[in-house]
Length: 479
Image (cartoon, rainbow, N blue to C red; front, side):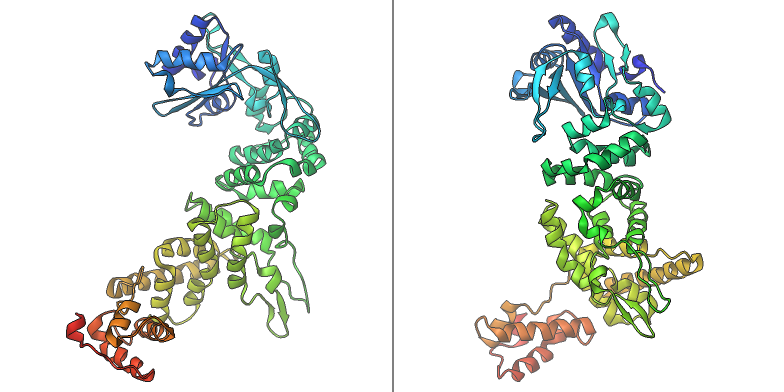
């Protein structure tokens, strides 16, 4: 592991130290950068604490880089300032101490010493500081033995965990997130405090909780974080829908897979193939409606008919409650949840060109995401069964590629648009337009016609006649 001198080896730290010496203030790099540097993790966020005004130090540091004063973002209410230097993000703050009211997570802040500032940190591994002044350049200050906890891979609070979590309940989410990100254990005493103080999360906004949850979901093995949240009884508070997946029912000696653990396996599987947060959310929610659709059928066992459609309908409400974006990201997750069984069904039966066209049409640009999710959804303990399904998926994907190349159905836009139909039959908007559009689209998907004016002209005329419509222009005039 790196020592203090190695942690601040980059020239940017000497410039910060020089600026601090000119002002006559002690300055330190503290927190996440120190932790990640010791662990050998890349980090471009530098938190600097000084005994004095962080804003004044930021302005002085800007001079070191020949930056104008307006390049410094100042937040007077918080006593902080930020500078962007190349790909570095620097934040400056004066050392402070905090005290809390039980009913609020907003602290009363006062100027303090470095010791005060380290006391208020969330975890020992985030409380280490390295001095930047020339007189004590590279000195590591580690009052809570964070270095030992890094070596032991332990998450521990600097002060009594009950106090730390009660003061700022978001730290409970951060404890789990750091454990998941780093692959660390949470000290038993600290873990017990998570259970004891979990109800304090009620004073934290859902936006901030979801921000930590998303960071956890983006971990290399996100299931670990969910298992920790379950074990410390926080998961039912923040994500009750997910908890309903847990458990197995048995009837006539027949059970079903535990969809909670199955979903976590799917999440880990997809995490091996994508860092896309929303693809991972699709894995989390793909079976979310199984509890509501679970039925036992004599002679068949447990069924979950329609869980994909019901799950898709639940996605907006879940996103809304979790304060996740209700834009195209949500619609992507909704589409993947709705379609996640389609490729699986194709892999089990004889594949028709019509079924392939429909999948291409409905998946559109999300086809890669859908196929990635479907592969992740294979979680059988039977290795041969998994290999067989994956081989079948290879066949499906190859046939999809062939159909796509021949029919160009990805992002399919029918040539027989509403405007064309109105022009051909000289009619205005109405139900007839919709009926004809559906008929023409179905014909293309079934392979009866190609998505071309000449190929579908006769069918268009025929569909019009069914509705007592007569063309007023010819094919040549339309083309």
